[in-house]
Length: 575
Image (cartoon, rainbow, N blue to C red):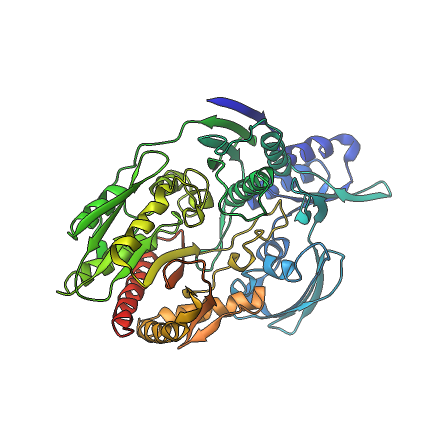
C-alpha cells in the first residue's frame, strides 16, 4: 500500500466560532453559508449568540430547499412563486434543478417556477399563506466560477461570509473545509506520477470522513447527503482526469485506470482524507439466501450462482481482472433465441433478480431457447456490497464499472475479460434480440464541487420512472416498433407501475424541462438506430433502483422480470 495524501481539516464552523466568539466582535452580525448539517449550524448559532454575535448560518448546498425546510412554515403555505437565476457558466435549468424536490415538500401549496434571466445568484421568492398574508424573500445561492483540472469553466456552490460590525460591512466567498478536502484530493491525485500504461493501479482508495449527517426528505428516496455527493464528485472528477491524461474525450467509457474507490463516511470529528493505492479486494461478501420472488435487497453473488446453476443447460463463463468468474447458462430449444443480461453496471441491482426470475419462468416452456448472464460485472458488484455496508442508501457509482475502471460494453482491447461473456452468448445463439437490464439513481444525483450537474450525465440527475431504451440496426425498425408495442402494452397491466412513472416524470419535467421521451402506450422510450451493436436489437431497461430496498426493490425486479417475459413473447412473433 502506498500513501498519496493524509490530511485533517479544521471545521469551517469551528473557525467561525473561534473568529467571532470574542469580546472584540460583540455586537457583530454575520451570515454564513456552509456545507454543514442543520444541527451543527444551529448549535454554532447558539454559541455565537451567547458571545453577543447575531449569527445566521445557512446551507451552501441546495439553499432554496433548505430555506423552505428551515425558515418557512410550509404547513400554512398556500402558494409560492419562485424566480430562479440563470448564469452563463451553467445550464439554463441548473438552479431549477437545485430546487428539486421542493414541490413535494410544501404540502398542498402550489409552486410555480420562472427564469429571472438574472446573474445575481439569487432566487426571488413570493409566498402567499392560507390566511391571505404575503411575503417576499431573496434567497442567495452562493457560487463561484472556476476552472477545473480539465480546463472546463464551472459554476459551483461555495461557502460565503457576510459581516456587519461597527458600521463596516463585507461579503465574500469563504472556501469551506469540504471544498478544501475535495480540491486537495483531486490536486494530489492529478499531480502524481502515474506513468503511461493503463491500468495505473489496482485500487485507488479515497477514504474521507465528514461530520455532516444525511438529511432524509419527506418524499420518496430523497435525502440531502454531502457524503454521497462527495463520493460522486471525487469519482467522476478522477475519471475525467484520467480520461484527459490518456488523451481520451471527457466521458469516454473505454478508459482503464484501475478501480477508483471513494469511501466517504460520517464521523463526528474533524474532516479528514486518506488517499492510498492498494491491492484489489478479491473476497466475496456473504449473506443469507432470499426467496427470489420477494427478495428485499440485492442477492449475494453465491446465491446468484446457485440460482443460475438451477436452470440447467450449458455453462459458459468469462474472467475478471480480480480473478472472479462471470457465469452464464445457455438453455437450448426450438423457440427464437434471446440474450438476457444484468449488472453491466453493478450498482444497478434489480436486473440481477429480474433476469433470474424471468429465466425461472421461461424454463417451464418445453421450447425455451435463451441465454442468460445475470451478473456481468462481479468485481463491481462486490464493491457495491462493500460500499453499501457503510452507506446502504447511496447510489455508489464507483461500483458502476469493472475493476479495470471501464464500462465492459465499450471494451475494445484484445483481452475481452467480462465482455467475452457477451461474445460467447451471441456465438452460441445467433440471437437477434438482447435484453440488457439496467437501472439508474432512485434519487437526485449531484456533483456540487464540479458545477452541480453531473457532466455527461445531465439527463440522469433526477428519477423519471421506469423507461426503455432501444438501440437497433437501421434495417430492424419495423421489428422494433412491434416489439415496443407488445412490451409496453404488457407493462401497462402491472399494478401501479404506470402511475408511479407518471408521478416521477411529471416532477422531473417541472425541475429539468422536457424529457425528450417518446411515449409508447403510456411508457417513456428512447429509440435510436445504431449499427455499432452486433446484435440487431438491444432493449435496455432503466429502473430507478440505485439504491432501494423492501417493497420498492420487489417492484423494481418485478418490472425487470415482466419486461424480459414480454420481450421474449414478442420475439417469437417477429419471425
